[in-house]
Image 1 (spheres, one colour):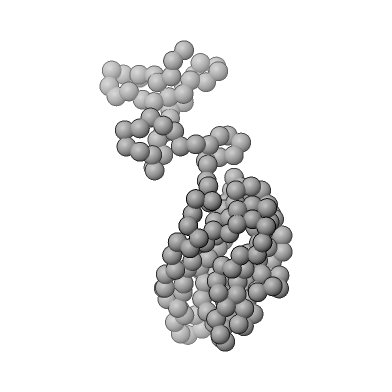
Image 2 (cartoon, rainbow, N blue to C red; image 1 turned 90 degrees about the vertical axis):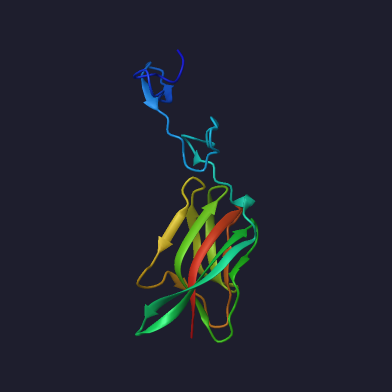
Length: 172
């Protein structure tokens, strides 16, 4: 039996007919091309298709401010693509400062264990992450991790490619 049931003469409601002959409504996700009937890729096992390999190396670095310890603290954010198999610098070392991470989003191409480092020293080792479930962590009143003074923040996504968003500050 065909998809797309008509509950009344107008409007037509897009549906998918199930094996038991019942219908479920289809909803077009934002990001689709106007007037297109193409569905955004994905399946029940893996969710929507997310491909961090199509990201440019560095998308943007922005400045913001937050109040901490009685003063204001400049906040920055950076979005990078980290390729598999090696450490990738997320935030460059700053002379006389630590990199303090307040927010973090990571999406992977395959399931993998991800490691965060202060230069070459491991800060957080082997965090299990799924390709089907991007990780999003924010600490609005504190921080998630920080590097040593004069050390870059690095990530190693193992055998996966990763898209990484970091919200951070530089502190003495």
